Length: 397
Image (cartoon, rainbow, N blue to C red; front, top):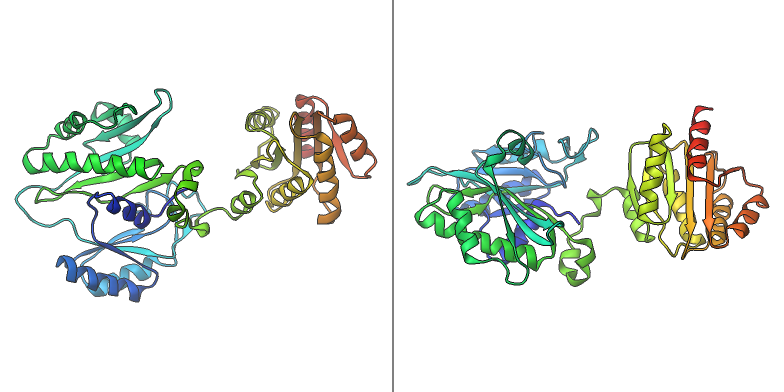
């Protein structure tokens, strides 16, 4: 589950991670009010106005602006709220911005030069350990840093038996070439950040940049956070932060019916049981010249109702020109799936999209009889390759 920046920073703050003072606002007037409140707390006379969407690269798309007066706070927030923000992570359609985060200015004069670093925490599946990845090149795309200057990327892995050790925090501060108070503050920062990562059951925690102020404070100037969906039952308070408006409506609907669905850009709708079979089905469609329109796993215990809902979700995509149903009956019974296909035809009404059905396994013969006596116009296949070739043939016609 993805979080907004302001939500992620609330979590960081609860674990003692220093973050700039910020207030979220949904209108320009509330943004000005937030700036006034921040000014009273921090004496800041400049503010950052930042679009809140579930995507990175907001600055490149015009979603992050600096305001040097209260009038500019109103002006900049007016420009951002309501805009469709397009970034490298939103796709060409972009995302509608409904709120902004107004934050204090952290670029102020002092005894030393401000500096920006990069830091992220995620699971290294190969080693089964939390990996801390960090770089002196903060404020930049980490992919670009990895490509052009890979020697500037460092990693530190945490043994789950003992947790993050003090010497590892010192090593990170040392590689950042920090001294004195900044060195000590960076150690505290890393320790608190690790506590936040573990305590919230995060799947990804990325700070870009980690900011060293001119008076040697260390702050999370930005934050991208994704929580482990499977651990949310332990965090009802974090689950309450879910913003459905930022998610694909079809994926939200699929989740409500316990379907695993991801929308893609192709024209062949896929309905499969099992993630591995779904991936194989998508591969064979590609190899046969088609393009998958979605990943949809109805699960190992699919019943007629769930299959009908899967059909409804697939058919909401106007790009879908043909639907391929590929079910292997191990736990799930093929006749139940077949009944779901028949029910979907009857309940949805006219379905003018060709449907190719491949049912193999438990009660496959009964399923075949059900479909043949239903009067439905479907194409039947036995082999996966045969099903994929039928998809190509239907699309060509």
